[in-house]
Image 1 (cartoon, rainbow, N blue to C red):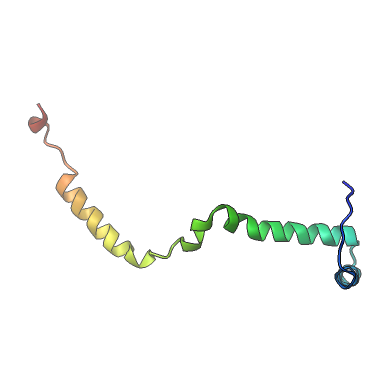
Image 2 (image 1 turned 30 degrees about the vertical axis):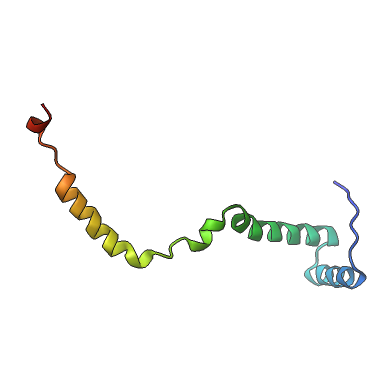
Length: 83
């Protein structure tokens, strides 16, 4: 797809020079930069709660202890009581 973008002159020159240093076309360089930018921001923007993922890891031992108490107390059902 072809499109027109207005890019500041200095940014354009820097991007063109970097693309030449890496031996790729400016088109491929810009496409790779856009892919990288979109990949880095897509997860944090759509799932902001992920920044806290794993932050309660220090409570795992306590969680297991509580789960064991619950299992011990409520895990078995006496069928005679249910008749």
